[in-house]
Image (tube, rainbow, N blue to C red; front, side):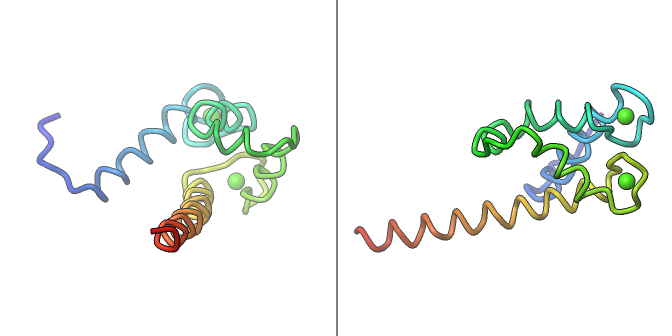
Length: 105
Ligand SMILES: [Ca+2]
Ligand SMILES: [Ca+2]
């Protein structure tokens, strides 16, 4: 692919799409993540997030929460909701860190 220089945000979006399809294509519907695919993605891409929680049923809970149309799988649209929610959580954490750093200096 003779890609033009893409902006950071555009690159992030492309990465998001690539990550989704890397896992969604493993089995069943190529365009959706089943529970196994979702779990694999969490283990490989969000391991820190998973390790932060001691709840073994978390992937299942996330899956149920994400599956808006109740078809038992997570499609790209549902996946983006997850990423947006995680990004907001990360941002809050990041902002807290910035504030703490400011206070200590
Ligand atoms: Ca699939
Ligand atoms: Ca769904």
